[in-house]
Each structure stands twice: as C-alpha cells, then as structure tokens.
Length: 485
Image (cartoon, rainbow, N blue to C red; front, side, top):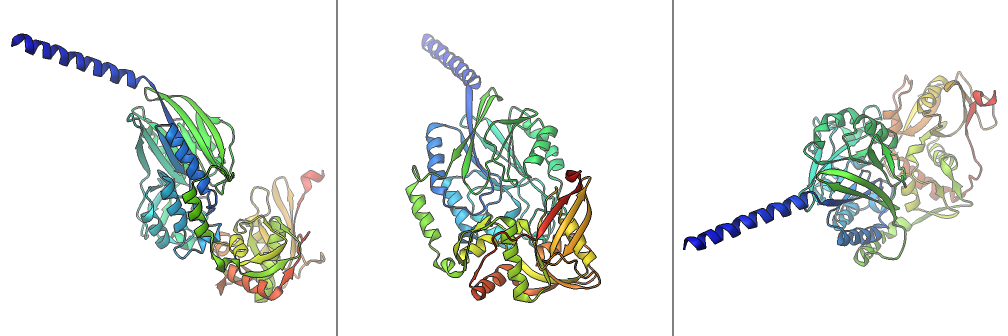
C-alpha cells in the first residue's frame, strides 16, 4: 500500500515539474499580436464587405487579432447622415465586423449628444477617451483606456485621446459639446505612463493628427504603438519615432492597416506594418455586401436638382458655387464658407442630386448673417489664415492676402473687377454658425440666424438656377512678397 502511495506521489511531482516546464517554455515562446486598424471612415460603407472578408481571413490564420478604429465614424455620406436613425448603419456594420474598440473623433459629436449616446449604447465595442471630461452633459464619462488580452494572457492596454485644437474643443459645432470639457490630449496621455508596467503592451489610439502623434511619441517612448487619425494621413511604410511605431491609413475606408508585433516574455522584439487595399471587388463577405445594397437603396437622395455644365474641381470652384448659392438666395452682400465645411473635392459634370449636396455639406450648420465693416471683414480673414493656407471661400468680393516674413502684411478687398470696396460702408455678410462660434473676429453687431441650414438653402437655389458653370472661377489670392524678392 505504501509503495502505491509512493508511486502516485512520484507521478504527481513529475506532472507538476512537466507542467511548470511547459508553462516556462510557453512564457519564453514568441507570441504574435495582430492589430488591424481603421480611421476617419466618415460614413463610407461600400468597402465594409471587403473589410469583413479581410478581418475574417486574418483571424483564421492568427490567434491574437484585434480590430481598432481611431475615430471619425460619421459625417460625409448622406446614406448614413440622413438615415432615419442617424449613424446607425456604421455601428451595425462595425458590430458585424467585430471591432474591439473605437476612439472618439471630433465628428462623433456632429449629430449631437443624444444621438451619440444611443450609438454608443448600440455598439458591441467600447468608445474610450482619456481627455473627455463630463461636467454636465448627456454623455457618460468614457473610460480612459481598456485592457485586452491575448490567448496566452499577454495584456494589451489601449489608451485614447482626442484633439481639442478648436478653442479648447474638438472641431465640431460647440453647441454639440455643451457640458463637456476636453483637457490637453498630450499632457493627459503623459499621466498614463504606468500602463506600460508589468510587461504589458501599451497602445495609444489617438485622434490628434500625425504631427501631434509625432510629438506624443517623442514625449512618451513608453508607448509601443500609436494608431492615429484626424489628419487623414496614409502611412504606407514603417514610421518609427523614438522607438514608437506610428500608423494611420488615410480615410474613407479605402484601406485597413495590419500591424504585426512579435512579443517574447512580454517584450516586443519586432514590429512590422502593411496596408491592405479595400477597394477591390473580389474577396468580399457576401452577406455584408447584400446589407450594404439595402442601406444604399435610398431613392429620396437620387432626386435631381440641377445640372453642372462642366466639372467643378477643388475648394475654390466648389466654394464659389457654394457661397453664391447662399448669397443670391438670401440677398446678402458677401458670404464666406470655411473650406473644412466643404466635404467633397469635385462635382462631376451632369446631374446634381440631393445626395451630392449632402455629401458636400453634411453638418446641418445654420446660415447666419451679420453686418460688418471692411476692417471687421479683414479680421475674420486674418483669423482664418493658418499654416500659410487660405481657408475662407467667398461670394460678393475678391480678397488677396499679402504675406511677408511669414506674417500677413495686408488684406486687399475688391469687387470682381478689382476695384477696392467702399471702406465707409457696412456690408451684410453671411456665414454658417460654426464660423460664428469658433472663429475669433471683430464685430460690434450680433449675428442673426436665417432659420435654415446651409444645405437647405443650396437645395432651393439649385432647383431655381437649373444649371451653372464655375470652371476657372477664382476669388481668393495669396501674394508672397518673400517669394518675389
């Protein structure tokens, strides 16, 4: 009997030793972690069938696959923006594709907090953000970070931050952010250096733009990977800054990024990156494709409003058409439109539909009017001129920014024939309420709402005008005196 107990004890000890040896061997084996990532989808759903196929294929090959989004799901596709339950199709498709987490982008707030709250509740994945502070809003304060695990229990900490460069707020209408506060994203991220402790992987899921991602990497080498958005940058080769891999895949779901991390004993020993094109028609998820067809079948948006005699290209031509529509419809002297509010790069020759207008102007901003003198107009143009680029498109006048030593020396205001405008006159000036609320310019009088959105005004204008031609139209000019010397 004793001999039997002794044998059992020997076998049990041998089992423990073998188990510990296997555990030790597993600890020191290389683990592969795959991070698939998107950013700035902006409501573009047509490539989801291809994305779903790619994600499913990668998950069949690799054990540890995580799908991340770096913000800006909404605004840019009227199929989504004008859907009865605004934005729902994107959440539905992301749920079906199996996203693990999403950052907040500035355009997440475009529909307002009530709708965003509903979208967040419908998502099968969390939205996270470290620098969003709920003071008295409809939204609950999101988690700053989440923890994911591989099959072998390697921990992956994912922290998220959003840009707040528009007067301390993300670039959306301030009215949509009531009760919310946004701390400095990079300073906030620096408070979470502890997330790299205990052999965890540390991923930053950001919506602050490539330039700020580089600054973040320089300040926080503790981060292993930064997956970013906001600047719509396509980084198609390995970008390492201070030992941190920085990734971003353009916009509108044209591509998905695949980051491969080889980890040994909790430490990354290799990082690689590739971009997968999602614009092919082959190798798609058929069920997802059928669902996309259903979402796209919106006959209301196919209504023809007018005809473009020739193609309109770029913000200048489209901006001239856009501002003319507002000025002529409301009998204003001058109208301005910010380039960031024009969301398409061209209007093709031929029929213009309701869908075209809502693609161009998806935000639901209201038209405002305000009386300004020429110096006040110049202060608006001066504020809008950033990074050496003209922002405001215009109807009713031409303007020239004269630059010297990287500073504005003069702003010249003329009519279309080049004759200076009357400096003693006050002009009725139109612009959207986003400009009114976010651009810092001089004005003595209060703005007045016209009671309609800019998109509604443009739609009515198109129905009346029938057809138009803006080829070669230009009203904004930049004169660099340094380049002439």
